[in-house]
Length: 196
Image 1: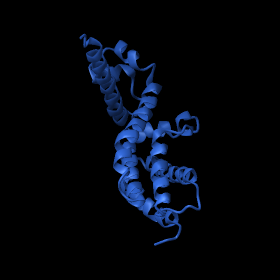
Image 2: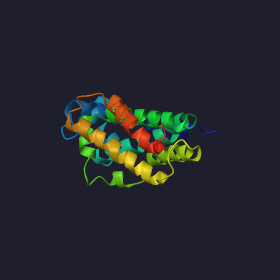
Image 3: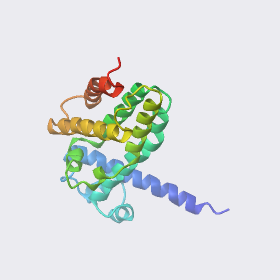
Image 4: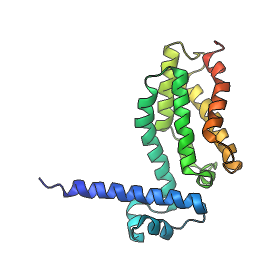
């Protein structure tokens, strides 16, 4: 049995991930605008031509960050939020969301937080996982049924993206995960429907 395509795929996946990691590191150091494709390739130890085998430009790096984040939420976060009660699942979800944003970095997030960002408008795995958490919580009577699950998801993302936006505008001056946890605790009474 010929295994060359499999090894090629593994090598391709590793090279793509190495380029993404190099891009993230450089964007944290120099900002999105200050980072060049040549520098990304040098940091990753690959030829510039290699970059174009995976990405058409720096914008594709941002798209890949979204896609990788969605994959992470569809697998790891979905699994971690499946068991606990709704409140704990929400805490777990937003802890992961904060860590993902911290990993992405302030400057890169600033580039992403624009009205022209088409990825914000799309329903992604991240929102689907949160909707599953909310629906389970509503079915168990842990969360209010006065709002649809979709409305809760939309409102939670509106609120938490606002926290991320503030974190970016403050230059990452505070612990994003801690602030999101504090904000979620303020929201939980309303999500319960007033029950204590």
